[in-house]
Image 1 (cartoon, one colour):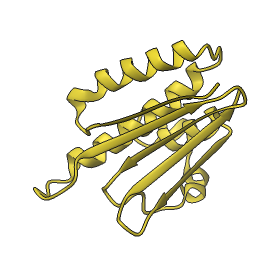
Image 2 (tube, one colour; image 1 turned 135 degrees about the vertical axis):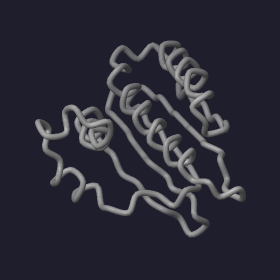
Image 3 (tube, helix red, strand yellow; image 1 turned 120 degrees about the vertical axis):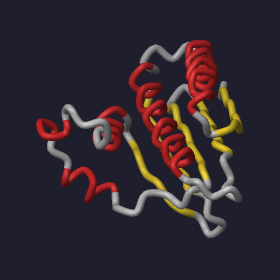
Length: 140
């Protein structure tokens, strides 16, 4: 059996608790025992998208955040999509520059290296329509 949920919601801090609760309850219902690391990685991606959306002051911006999660007996995967044009640096450049001791107390800069350690696959891309997609997956 494959479980799937897709949510479109305003990318605001006020909606973060709603999306966290909804996705946590969904993942619990699937019966996957090792969902907590995946859930933490997904939360970090959602937080990053919300921060970028909130920082963009263009009144014409699309503030929608889309989250899709699929769970099968072999894999759990998610795609988080926003329309803010993405991350300018490569994942490798960010991880290579990361110093865990130096960044420990910083407000920002830990998310991407943490996500990389918590899931089996982590990639992103910007499509031709300007949608930025972040993909994560883990074997179950």
